[in-house]
Image (cartoon, helix red, strand yellow):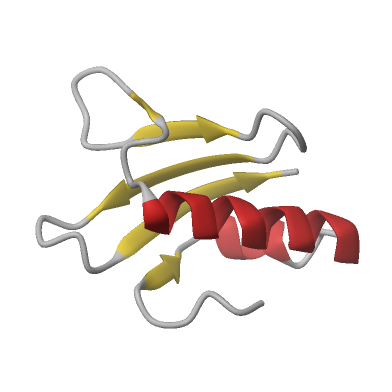
Amino acid sequence: MGWGRGVVLVEPALSQLVKLTAVESHYLDRAIAAIRANPELGAPISETLLRDYVGDVDGVRMIYYVTALRRITIVAYVEA
């Protein structure tokens, strides 16, 4: 997975990651690239800093937030 700098996965995202197939991992790569390009893609989750992103084409879902300086995306949950 080639996310480069700036993307951190935490539990339970890491435990979900090992369950993904190669195709699902590819979908996740595309979703992370899209969010890195536009961190506001996901819908805000009320009363939190979290955002909920669901890919239109491949159905990947991620719960994430972006740090204040927009340098690091913290992924809290992954579903493919």
